[in-house]
Amino acid sequence: MDEGHDETTAAAASDLIAPTPRTTLRRLAGRGSYDRAVVHAILDEALVCHVAFAREGQPFVVPMIYARDGDALYLHGSTGNRTLRALAAGAEACLTVTLIDGLVLARSAFHHSVNYRSVVLYGTGTEVTDEAEREQAIRALIEHVARGRWDDIRRPSGQEMLRTLVVRLPINEASAKLRSGPPLDDEDDYALPIWAGVVPLRLTAGAAEKDSRVAAGIDAPAYVARYSRPAPKP
Image 1: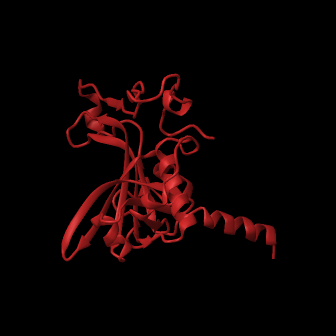
Image 2: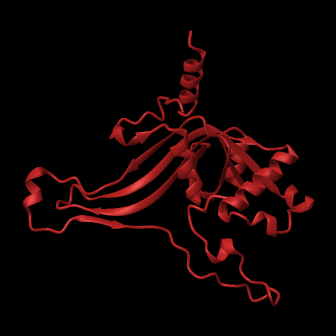
Image 3: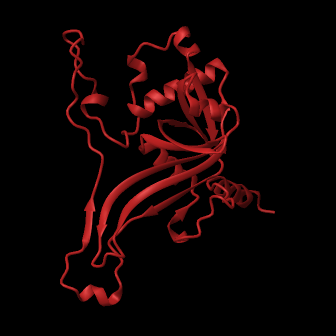
């Protein structure tokens, strides 16, 4: 047996998130991806996720800031946060993230669309109680918002950490779905005298607005002055 080939095959398999009945795409399946790197890249670029869960028969969908660290997503908030308390108690969650890259304007109403990158993740949350992991999760959240910020700020106090609930969701049941490119019209419609194409969209940062109580002589750090998403690689 060729052990080198075996190792290569195992490595390739580990780069994929195994599809499940819930994550297997059926509609436009060709746009789907189970590539772990694709899923991670979308999660790393986006800022806000939507977390769905049910409690006593009532569905909820809540927007939240999150962060990825390895193969886990972290959510945090007040210890009284209803969403986090439900997830920490074992409620099944569905988490989604979407990035819109462009408006696809077709010749027909039917074929208008958007270019996008999205992730859907299913899982059961776990409350993070280990203090080292809790601090690492808070650091990941701060760095997800602004890479480089953690080294500049005051760390959370013990009292602040007591008032914070951190929940971990594993990234082991997830899929990505993506669309790119021009409109796909019916063949007969290409001859119509109608403009068609894509209006690209992207998230851009405006000029940083300094808090009036920042001490004199303190300038905006580079990660603020040149803020972008996705953040530059370290």
